[in-house]
Image (tube, rainbow, N blue to C red; front, side, top):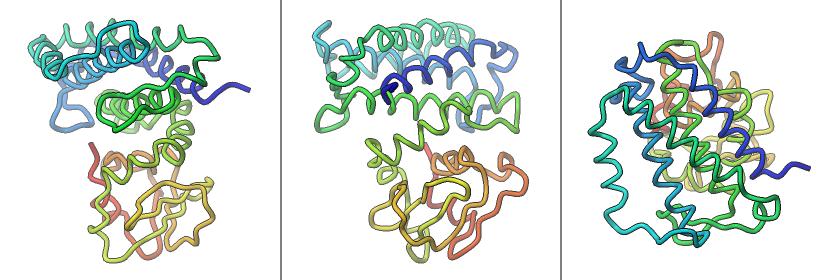
Length: 258
């Protein structure tokens, strides 16, 4: 059986390859992350790959641990690049990071633990790769939606993101959610999937059979985009609706995104 780490690394490669065909004519367009151009999203992904690779190599004993000013120095260098150079730099930086993960053995998939630099302790390789996939999949959408307003998360990344967010990365929703935006707690069933979004003191995505108070009737990829603040009215699939004790607009407010 293919490990979660292996499947996640394969999805990272698929996301990388999928963006290679993106045309340069859109680099200065506004991305799905409205404060950034497409080129700036490429810069964010490229610098993120460089930072992640540095942490990865340090944890494997292949390099020294980055110093306290390392991240800022990387961001400053990338921010100073031209739009074309930001996109070109992403291709090289992201490929190096994915290739480093691909070089790991099946045994390492199960034994390696990495601290990405902002957690109190190391996490399994699968979760480390899942953190990167969560960032890449959504920022890849930010890029693709600039040329295709109907774009969604990819079919390969969607089920893996849900698996990670309901498993080893369940703590992420607690960081980004604003449950106080709702007038009462909610358990939102994502129709056609095993997932429920629990919103309250312990906000999480779960497969537990918690009684639902509302239903999100739309594709799973759209539910994941909702959780990352990427389900605005202009990018909501036709026919999608939320019924129960919470509205779609309230959910948008509860999940402002990153």
